[in-house]
Length: 503
Image (cartoon, rainbow, N blue to C red):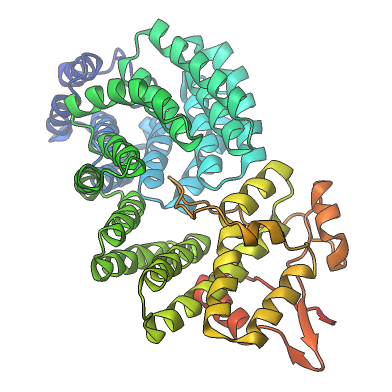
């Protein structure tokens, strides 16, 4: 809503009616009222109505429409309505976040923060701006920054808007969960839920219930997820909030897939895909296609699975999500490998494709451990993503009978971290996590220390950023050179330093 979401002396009857519709939960009605109010209105009221209409469109999941409305509001905003600009920027950033356009979201929020720094009374906007900045940091997986911003916003919210205290609490829950402090995260989330219930904010209660359910799902506590998921889905479906309803449908699909109920899983995922497509949430839609591909492969429809994977890869690549692309390639190789294992006479071409996908993906994924200064992050990345990917690369190389490639993988892997032979001998079943992980980009303000490979893990354990692993040479031959070059080109990430160490 513009500024505080409350009426002011200058608002006309149409704006007041829009506010009232929103307060009683009629978001679509509020959108229509605000759009009508913007027609032929004086400049200040027109910009206010457009800001509120954009906010309603975003809440309904119509994110592209929201961006268009907000840009129009900014373009027509008169000088005597400059106080509305921070509100418009904050709301615009919300829509950008839903569309996955994080650079644009960050830029608009930083502009809003500068405008709010003049000390002028802007009601709840400082709270909204800090909350949105925290959300962008969470999207970028900048957990330390997210935690810092969440703590700052908790203090500001206590002073300016104690009735909104649930929002920074939920952000603290999200940051805590991602660094591995999962019990603390659940505690923060339950505090947030209690705060929203006390404030009578039904939409925030539903959103928190959904987030809590997802925390339970990602922690493997499927039984605990059912109750908050059902409660939140009932609200979002009734309010016709497509994006949130899609998230709930995806979560239900994941639960069904985990039980082996592929018919239900496919139906839930298709419902989620419809919701995300309507909302313009392209990254969420790509995630669901990846899950649908897993279901298709489980039902022996590998052609459909590969078609869906290709569609998701294209979206991730367009948005610069190189590590999502690498994880998708690993999972694609895993599905191909399962087909190879189930066939009495495996197709050599399928094995070759699996190898071509698995090795570059594993090298890129494994290199991420050098960029994560937090021990919990490194352990989770290694256990969940890197170890299964590297294990699959070894298996594919061994099946092709390429002894040199196996030796090169062993040398590359053992140059910095010992190989867990026990895990290779008794590997757990590979699974695709509920959400793909994408590590934060290196902090350009802190130059990486160029330490020897043997010290890399020690340095990272102390919280020091280190360079990517070096290239290795054996009698003048660079190990895995072609695979490394292919991976860096395909994923748009540096996975080996320019240093060369001779074995």
